[in-house]
Image 1: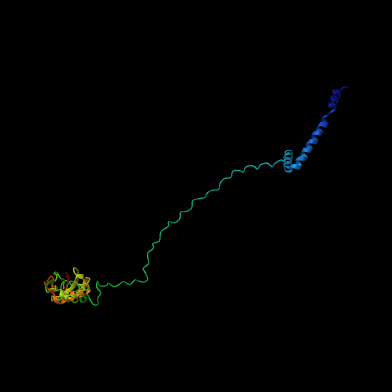
Image 2: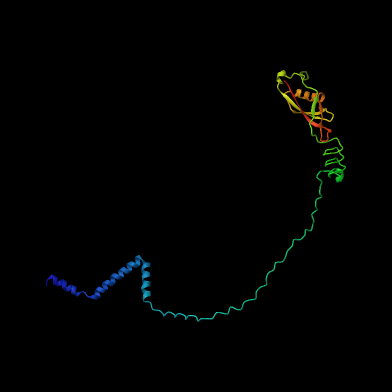
Length: 241
């Protein structure tokens, strides 16, 4: 017998049970290797396979649907409520009354109106339209009044250089300057109460000017509306050349 015939006889001797055993051995080896390397994965696969072939009691039947029940009656409508009415409220009068201030006169004084001159006419000082006082209003029996004309210079001169001393630096230091003084011309035409309104560089000459205006000059006094002389201010300007 040749070699080809021997090999053919050996192949013919293999059987299916032997092949199945070999396959099972390989599967067992792979399963053991998987259990060693990935135990979690193999456990999950086992649970799935077993659950596919698990046999248990039949599931309980679903409960029947509930029967239709009628809804309860809503009931009758209640009685309407009473209409609200606001209670009137009024402010209570204060328990303590405020004391009113007494009316005061327009001008501070003591006494009645007829004595203090607060009325149109009275026996006071003549602070209103008329009275028997000093005549500080529009009319009265006193000497006062409102001037309607100004005093007028009518006599006396201040033009002598000898009346003024020579200032430091000579008369040229005072040349071209001036002083303005204010006096009150009385009803007698004399000047009084001199005051320096705009001084010059020479204070001594200014004082002398006031003295000369009061002692040397004469005036026609101012007049009120009735033609009576009244005291009034007058301004004098003294210049040096």
